[in-house]
Image (cartoon, rainbow, N blue to C red):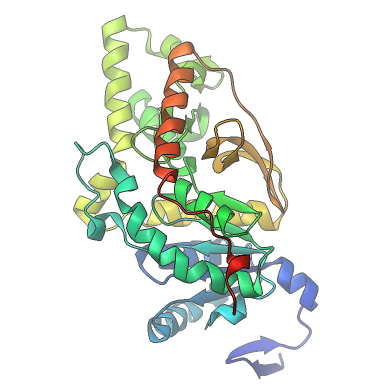
Length: 341
């Protein structure tokens, strides 16, 4: 097959048109542990035709890309390269993974109610450098906020002039919820329907009232005493709520799960699947970005679905929203459109 060198990476003659490539183009900002996991998962999933990795240290990005390029022949065709912010032009979706992580930011104390929100001020500073650069070349892209804490940072992105903004939110938390339930019940996680809503953080809400195993309410499956069910719930919630800390204690970074989730979100967006997943987007009712089941497609969240909840769950969601509103008080209203080149 004939090839031509273009912009430092190889392209084959007879490729899809530029418009098709843009529709399947993704940018990843940040080549740390999470950024690399997002990049690898996206390549393996094969949902993008073109992926550009942007990192403050270009040499680091080049090394990561070179390493992955050698294995891309084993995945659906993907044009993978390192670049500058200008190379994000035409990207349908941009993942932002850059920032201070939980380990470096000291957010690994299970007794600290702030949790990931402890990283907000530091990562606001990181985002203030990144967002104007994206806005110059891709103001209409779908921005997927992966950096912790993703929900208030997503609201920061909105305030800087972007209109299509997602937080990875509680998608991963919901998968962790399903996993731990399935392990306790000795069933396949695919047979468990369970969701975590609200903040991706310590105030997150476990929707126990709607947990089902193949359509059967989880408490019917347990068939235990009320005290046994309470202990069951408490152990599951603790395992999910602090899963990131347990992972960091063993691996220094929680990266692979969020990488796989981010790649799946990218796939849903690029394919305009209109899949319903628990993901973070700005909710006018609560005045913040938080996670609820949402119809996700090409332009981001098309519709938010608010499930039935018990009174306690409803109150917990309100408290979670209040936690996020308090965090958002640390954001400033300035837009990227106010920044002069």
